[in-house]
Image (tube, rainbow, N blue to C red):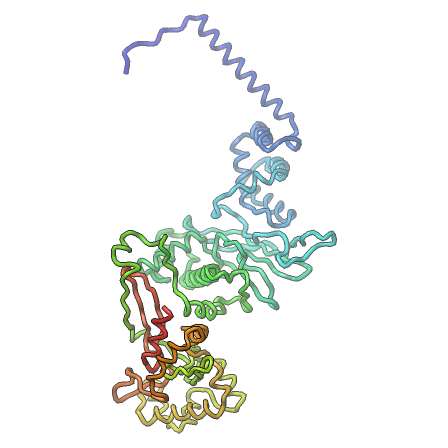
Length: 505
């Protein structure tokens, strides 16, 4: 720092400085007085802001504007204004009604993006009917209030708070518009095209999207369970997160995952939930999953991944202990006149609970007066109660297993509809188009197989299991650790089955 002292001003110079500051203050006072006399309704948004700040002060204007932004404009004006006045009264905000009368004329001031955690009311993202309804003038039909505003619990990274939820309705088609989905009990419900900033765990509980992503990352990278995340959230926010229980975390996880998968598959605009249960979408997601894997594009591949051999090195192996139950009925393996002799003839559909067959085969068999419950079907095969109990526990002897197989084979031969129903592996894993496009290769692969062979290299030992368990999974992994193929393996692991899998891959 310099040791030089600033020269002292003379009395005349100081007097001149005081006079200038007084003039500047007078000019500011005159400007504020002029702005206060201007009607903000007849000016631009920037001028309106200046006028409102001059009249009511910047703190009051900023607080009023944040309140305006916390209540979305997609709800009816009457309800929105009543909620705004209530919130303003609760906050002790004075002159809010005067500021609101001006701000509502400039929607661009309110639509400025705000932190979703600060939104006080959860409303649909639209104020018009999405099903094409119009009013008498031919304009898009406006939505009306369906239910009064209700209190809901909102969990976020900032803690747990109480917000209002508003449901709208189109009076012409009776479609209800909630925060996350729209529809009705007759035609079903579907997600909105745009992703909402929160996941709906239940009708009265919502999870902020950022908190949901955090929980998802913890489950993937740290194996944090739903219960552990719930307890950790409560410990970190003591006295605030009492409502975030294990079931709430679980519901938000599954709803968020189902929505994400439907968006990834471009089905979010078309898939309809009939009962508003996420389990309805699992079948169609699984159907797509069987035929594809998550993409690993070149743009997403890192240099370290390529150094490990990504795109050049692949390893195939079987995971034999990862199995699941499936339908016991046999299916036809004939495509375009080509018999796929070595390919598994099982039905890959999941079992109807408590039955030996899938929903589709049960429907056909019940129409033929054939018993489908597991115990009853095993009894019809000639198995005793003791043998049926052994069959359920996977301790079936060779003779009992032969009785069950003979019964299923007889049913498939005598009733052609049974063989045509269900979902054979060639349909769910490879696809009939592949067989039609490569008939010669498929025929050559099938020619060396022995028709009617029942042996499976996993059927070893004295005790056998029923033909309702898969035999593991075929996994092909790239050098970088990215899974390239992940397919179930069924009974009879012949080369035709593996040929089709590798050829399709």
